[in-house]
Length: 234
Image 1 (cartoon, rainbow, N blue to C red):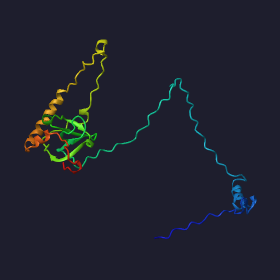
Image 2: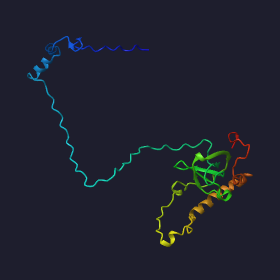
Image 3: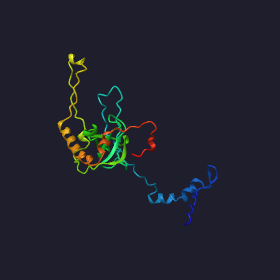
Image 4: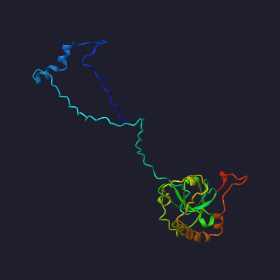
């Protein structure tokens, strides 16, 4: 290793004899520092540098109106979310087991990962009643069973496809206010029904080609007494 450079300690021109009392007087230090030469160059006067002019900020008039309570300003969020990493066990066509929600215990076929990081899955609907929907990968278990989805067209499905359409709320009259039973049922658009049928038709062809796969997808997953989840191989 190269030898480290030794630092030379700074030595004062006027060392202290005792604390607060220097060796040289004020006039001796005047000559020692060469201040007389600087003064001689500038006609017997020390040079002075003009101070920079301060920019005067325009006077802002106080607002005529101000809120009665303090209004909190939202902080700027500069966080850029990173793309969600997909589990290594989940690949297109993998059969997944849903662990939570309305379809808990159902087996579904994974189609693709959307921009939001959610997984696009389907039952298919005709086999186990699970429609095309988005699922968080935290709530699924990947299995070793796979389905061929090469014949399924899933290009049109994105996060906007599953977005809710904002509807204006209708004002209820006096008679309708107390009638809670008369609630309008949500109608699924015909276009989405046709998309489900198209995806199911292509999937069922490849599912029926594998023996007992249709029965496997239709059966609900559950644990019975004596089964150890950490020892199971999916």
